Length: 271
View (cartoon, rainbow, N blue to C red):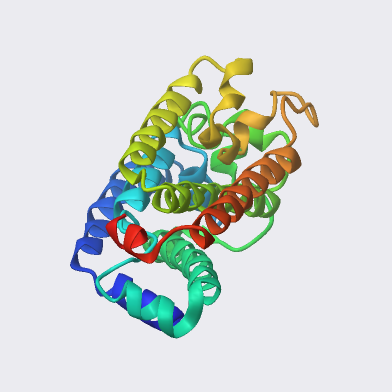
């Protein structure tokens, strides 16, 4: 079942839109890295471009939009749905959808990060330390909006990368949980609208940075806004953000499964 779902998704021609996303990554992140290198002649830590991707409000917005578009048919429920449910049962079908969601998220990020690493590896070094471009020339080179001081002051780059990755992974997991419950209740179009409202409102709230910011799921996916400029001074615990994103995402899946157990197969096909 998982192989069928993944193959069907990976061969979907609409996923070629990821090429457009990579163009945005090149223009916003890769070109910036090369421009700074040309002026300072100082290499970057290989983790820094990846940290920039996950801590830039614009890139996070683009990553979210493209992911939602590429996964718009999730959960996969084509004309063979009735046959799949009869053959494997609802429980196995549902678990396969969760496994597929995880694999799809990993595939998506591997493509984006893999491209970024390949595009910048010639001017990067592998070490757990911030480059001089970040530590000494951040303001001068305009990098402060890519790796904010709130993040630089808190932790080394490897830890920043891991935390950024964990939070963004769980955020995408939460988004797919929303799509699953929209499918289970036959309200996918409504859920799609809610996702867009929460996403754009959440990104807009980053410019305000007050208590309302934490009402939006996307805010919990961006690591740097969890901290102040002062060492170990957190506005909101990243651990709590992970628990909230993963917990609510899992709750959405559980609610979806309970609903689907009580729903007629013909109604699910209609969704």
